[in-house]
Amino acid sequence: MKIYLSPSNQDGNLYAYGGTTECRQCNRIADYAKKALERCGFEVKKAPEGQIMQTSINESNAWGADLHIPIHTNAGGGAGTVVFVYAKTDKNMKYATPIYNEVQTVSPGTTDYGVRTFPELAELNATNCTAVYIEVDFHDDRGIAKWLIENPDKVGEAIAKGVCKGAGVKYVEPSKPTTKTIYRVQVGAFSIKKNAENQLAKLKKDGYTDAFIVEAKI
Image (cartoon, rainbow, N blue to C red; front, side):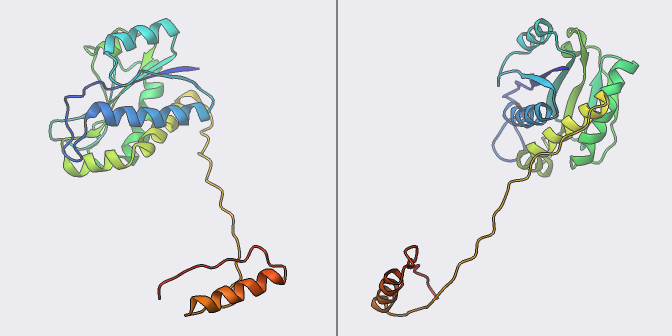
């Protein structure tokens, strides 16, 4: 399945926190969504940051995308996720509903705007495939803007979870970084550096070649 991600190019839409823009933050979200979707087995293309909308529409159509996902953040004094579709057909709602549910669950705004029709949007009426237009939350709220900046990975993963549910594909969790436990043996603590050096020399003479001195303040 081919998925085209089309993050906002609206660099003039300033966030209420962080001195950043809708364009920058939606591209960060799209980067995380791309990684998550690819991990789940989808073929994904993401529009370059700042690319004009018509070029993205043309690329999506030419590529033969199965699902086109514009990613935006909202303004106007609200708080919550809203998803737009051209019409509430079964084909569109198959993806729109789970994407909305997953993104709304992680985003801080609590208003239940739901899935709405907005056929005037070019990325809904000019794309050949199913299109689901996401407004993640409202960036003109300072607290929400801060959350959006700090959590693009959570939004990206939520988008991927929604797509997986719509497609009937198992969501693959991101791999956790591996950690290794090591154990160190301390054979002495000295307030005089010379005494520490003498002890180190003795240890190395006895075959403990990995011994070393660590300086610490107490």
